[in-house]
Amino acid sequence: MTKHHSSLIWITALVGVLASCSRKADQFKDFLNNQEIKYPGAITKTFTRSGNLRLGVGWSPSPDPSVTKYKVYWNNYADSTEVTAVTHSPSDTLFTIIKPLQEYTYSFFVYSYDEKGNRSIPTEIQNARVYGQTYRQSLMNRPIDLTDPYKLLNDAGNQLELHFLTPDSTNTITYVRYTNTSNVQKQVSLLPAQNTLTLTDFKYGTKVAYQSNYTPGSTALDTFSTTIVDTFPKIEFGIVKCNKALFQIVNMPYDVQPYMSGTEVSKLWDGSVGPQGWPNVWHSDGNSALPHHFTFDMGVAYDSLRTMEVTGRNCCHNPVDYEVWGIADITNAATTVPGNDPNWKTNALAKGWILLKDVSRSDDGTGPYTIDFGTNTPTIRYIRIRVKRVWSGDNYYSNMSELTPAFKK
Image 1 (tube, rainbow, N blue to C red):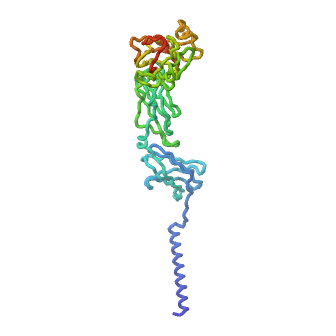
Image 2: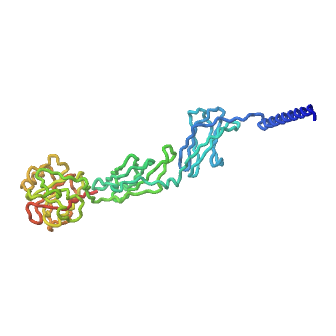
Image 3: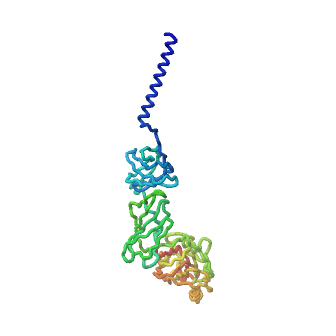
């Protein structure tokens, strides 16, 4: 083959290739109907709002004025919904609620469309959670204070104070349901910031129920109530021991002193059970003739003091004739004569002391022995025991193991 013929062959091949490319371009143009591909503007700033078997989906609209609608797809494009483009300002918000959905975590794809059906590149919204029965069944009612769930505020039993603990941060409200004194079912609300709720028309002897609501998030569409309704422990009067951890010795003028270190009045609230032996007892010194008295502070003013259990020592000088006095405030309450003075009682009454009980026992005072103060005790914080006679017949010594005051709850 000559060089001339070789060049001719290469030129012919090149012309053929160019002709072929020209035909393919024309064919692609025909496929697009002589139009180029257009992509409408995509959305921005997406957000979701969880709900009960539904979900709110929102976004900032596309600024592209050609956009006429949006389409939201989920379940691998098996489901969709359309939203009309009513604004093109990115400062606005478009929002749609999608339902019904299953309790699940979804991914959504949002497209912008123009009037010719062209669509934008997709914007994906991930981890969009929908809540339902499974979430609801995980919720528990707000906890109550099981150590002190309620307090009856009056003897009629119609004024009731309920005690709750601090709730979970997702708690929105707790509804309390009860029967009032007119035999009508009522419902009142307890907000998360409240730990107590007072009912002034409670029908004593009936139940108090409560049910809490929660939200899975601050922007959630729905709140969820617990699946169960709980009830308070039975609301009833009861005699409850005073908190001895708050008790303190009060040394007032003419109060009798202990026999020795370790036999102070504080032995009377050390929690011992049953008659105790020496030296685990309160024991007076021999310097104050009977009648003599000692005083202590219960730490709290009780308006419903009802009883006091007295436990004597396992021998010896247990009081069998004595008085229990009380007062709310010891300011200016100091008596000015000793306990064995004939004018002591008049002096004590003048100072504001109230005689709660004059006790006379026929046994040896070992105990335990429960004093009943009745149902009309005034407010009492400070207690004074005035010992008049002991079983041994001694005129100077007295001893006891434990004192346990109690109040009506």
